[in-house]
Image 1: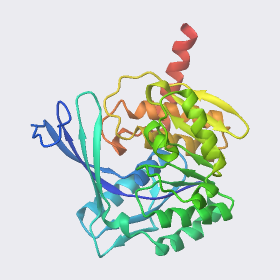
Image 2: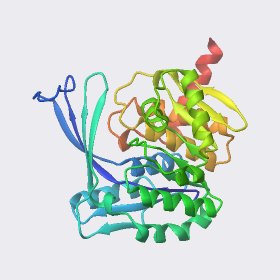
Image 3: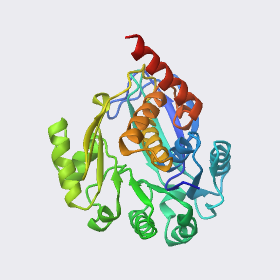
Image 4: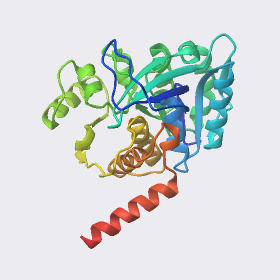
Amino acid sequence: MSVVVFGSINMDLVVRAPRLPAPGETLMGHSFETVPGGKGANQAVAVARLGIATEMIGRVGHDAFGQTLLQGLQASGVGCNRVLIDQTTHSGVAVISVDDSSENTIIIVPGANGQIDEVDINRLLPVLSQAKVLMLQLEVPLAAVTAAAKAAKAAGVTVLLDPAPARADLPDELYGYVDLITPNQVETSQLVNFPVTDLAAAEKAAAVLHQRGVETVITKLGKRGALCLSREETFEIPVFPVNAVDTVAAGDAFNGGLAAGLAAGMSLKQAATQAAAVAALSVTKAGAQPSLPTKEDLTVFLSNRHSNASKD
């Protein structure tokens, strides 16, 4: 495989309503569905659908959700031989509310994801020799994330960390193992403990993260695109304009597009541009994993953009 994803596998319980409720308020929604999700699983699917060999390391519970989650990953081409079915707990779930403007709130109950430990690290170690990129997130225990990053760094594998859900207590040790970190504005602010609302603040934040040991910082700035600062180069990543339907998996799509590009041998700028295109495509469809584009989808999208740009 080229990309290994170490992280969470959830079932998303998605409700849709005209707007998000205020605290203590009850609203009438207009739809409900169960959708395979979890930041780790989403990112694995995003990479696999782009034609890159992908292996998932994680856990599901011994329940119906667990079987459905595994079947969904396998149907998308993700290797699941090293996903553990935990007999002691339920599968992770995320309760997601989405309003008519595509904004969302998410509550996560970790379940099996919260049990990930050194047993899972031992299942990760044998596949690192075949990997180019290890993808990490923060929906599983921090000690396991740090151990996985350390093992990948020792194996010469590029470590890509999506610091979400954001937390300010990441250990200095973890930063030292990370090659690329991809926070959004809110996550960046929490990591560096000051507001990140514009490009100047994003540059300042990147300098802080570089000092902590991270090689490359890509700060996602929503509708303003993203800013990439490595130790060798700095560039902006423009957004691809689309009609947004659901933003719930945009960050995971971005990371999947980035990892797939790096695994395929693209330059950092090429991979980041691909990441922006994959994220743009993902918000045009509802759901987490169902919204993630295939390699063919991406090719058509970029071809159409190029054709339209030529006409202009």
